[in-house]
Length: 137
Image 1 (spheres, rainbow, N blue to C red):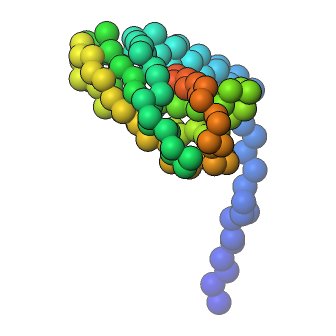
Image 2: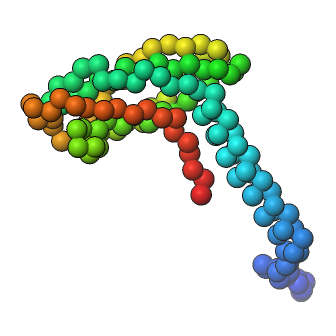
């Protein structure tokens, strides 16, 4: 009869300390590169002329102008927030916008999911638009 020796499974091999340190340094470097890339992208996108164009009780239209100053085509994530006269958030929407290199255009965005319907006497509505930066940590 044949005799088979089975190998130990799972075999425990400790990870060397220098390898753990190298992985930690690479991860921290990746976070730093990501943060610098996000900052550079947001500095190259100019947002201007943000204003409320029209509104009803259930939706708000916001006009804005975007200008891409970089030499690359970009897909930028934007966060649009609409506030009432008491600076309470009425609604927000996050969306992507494709921008050609060196171009500037005007856009209109509809915010149709509001937290509450607008009162008929509310006249002062404020909108803010910013480049959304993903946060890793």
